[in-house]
Image (cartoon, rainbow, N blue to C red):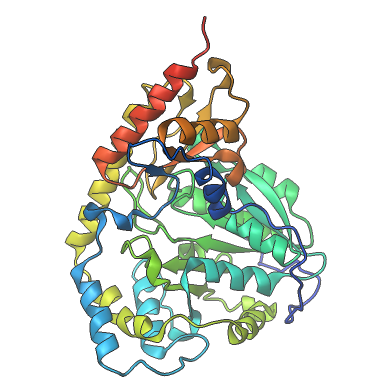
Length: 425
């Protein structure tokens, strides 16, 4: 029939094998590198406290402390002396089983422990997938704005990237026409970040289905970065990309870093959402397994605590965290309206950050987004991330998941900075 879905046929011209790679490629700037550069401009004579609006780590603030259940689970696992051994490369079975059960709660099918690779946080998940994909001629599609770790890892592994735009006027939806124009027979995957980092958007069910159908049509699979899963506070619920695993294969990246406010614990995962078993035909899973066998393992006693953390954390803990983040998001958007030189095209609905556009025509002596950020940290001891770092020149990423009072103060300082540099009419 005319409307019948075409079968997913992988368009990569070769099967995947373990690849030797060198480290002589020029890396893209990472968020940490941008932060270090900006921190180097901090005015040491400013007696005011420093305000971080630049990274998604709210764990330093009392209102974002993790649940005692998670802390007790770690202590119990450590003191049990049952997790002092070298773990299997893919992770210990109880942890993989718990992750499979946790992710399956939101899916129309059940995952097995064999679908799970336990990693040392989301960064290692990205490293494993990108390195496993890297080979001559292959390319992947990345969102703009996006998370720069993908570009940095791809540059290190000599993997070509092509950028498609997220459209701010449409709630940062994927420009699907651009995706179709960019893809060719060597495009193997598209990265989708939901909830959105850095834009704070949440994709609807209908839009994610369109993404899956487009990926199927183009013969590529989806890498779904869902590190911020369930941190949503707008009108849209969180829908995992794995919901559409029967349409197109999906590799999901997740972690406990954001939802449990423990980024330093470095525990994440890669989950294969492929109920039709299509990825087995490509060699990608073999390549991932081969690289996992070469890489470092996440700490075993933290893996040992995962069944308790994922299985028994109280819903009240999650509700309170999301409630505080929503309060922060509301403060952020309200304060931004008082600063004429920055415009927020879309109120955040999830995650912990928002993209705002700089209007340089309203400012004197500010050349671009990096210049804005450097002078802001010198004059106001406030750090925000230049949009160039995430692919959007003359935009700014503001991370708002901190103590509400500190957030308000930081944004008031940005307002003072604007008033000092406002172009005289």
